[in-house]
Image 1: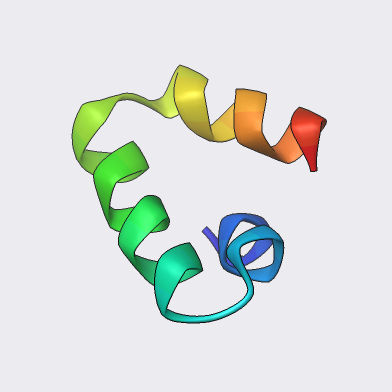
Image 2 (image 1 turned 30 degrees about the vertical axis):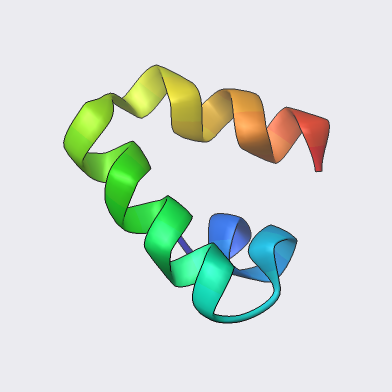
Length: 35
């Protein structure tokens, strides 16, 4: 989740991280790769 927060850069990152964890782990990996 730390990587996701860094990519989001703040509140957006925290919100996205929560959605990703709730949705699926695959999405987290995708966002990290995009970032």
